[in-house]
Image (tube, rainbow, N blue to C red; front, side):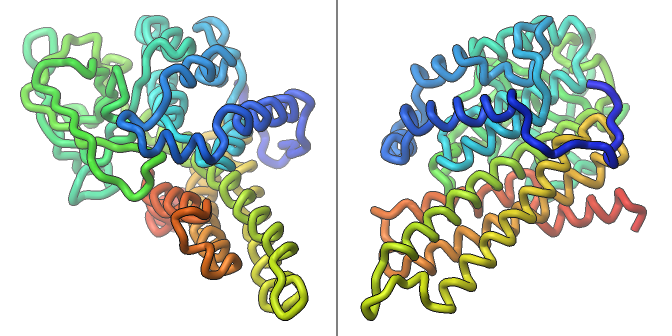
Length: 379
């Protein structure tokens, strides 16, 4: 993708975007309805590998991968439309970890050989990958990663711990961010590497599984280091791409919560009239609409300026902050509009609330995103 002028970016949906949206919505509603979501989130692995193959066959896992590497050759805008539709149905599985985070890391930091080796297998769905970056108690701070990579002959030895790695136990490959003399490097590690211990951990949102990753003397050869050297800038860009894509997914969840609330307000009668006719419910739904539209604007802008590094450094954390807070608030209000039934396990509202809460912490909470935004504009 070439350089883009943020002042001339068009936000009108194209024929391709509408086709992606229509096709994705139909497939997800037919094959991954909310009943299926409930079944998958209670299953041992957390997703269906047969369904994963179907998604790969549709080209979704390679949507944003170049045609030279077996992908569809689209960009972040098209991928964000797909993620928005996935967010509408709190779609379970490792798609975000593999097709967004890991793919962006390799595409951003990898050399030609690494891209040729990994991207075609990611595009085809042959392998699932994830990205392990953040640590406790440092949270989202990249300046002091405790995980280390020590040079050992022609290779590296990694030691450290990465908690809450998205789809860690589902992945065939884990890309680990570790500190070394030159700064931060990203290392591609097979899930069965000696010394690598992956343990699934309990999570708030069971539709999006996480794992603790422990590295104890994990040895890799020199080719495991993406780009062959320091990659802090590439890592930050990768996380920005993840934040923008997550914002699009949060928009989809927010939109569905709004639709659920409006539908219920029209059909739930109290005192002989629909509850949507009461001023308090009208105001709630109107506020939900305003926050959803605001979130859409920030998310759509972020994915469209990804090639302009200066503008993207502002747009991505702005979208991350706005969309996280909007989704959290809207999901909570959805439960309030539904009243007593909204608090029950049988109702779907809690699926969205859990996804909203978990997603808001995935790549940095709203406060952290505002810190990045402040840094980007020189505050």
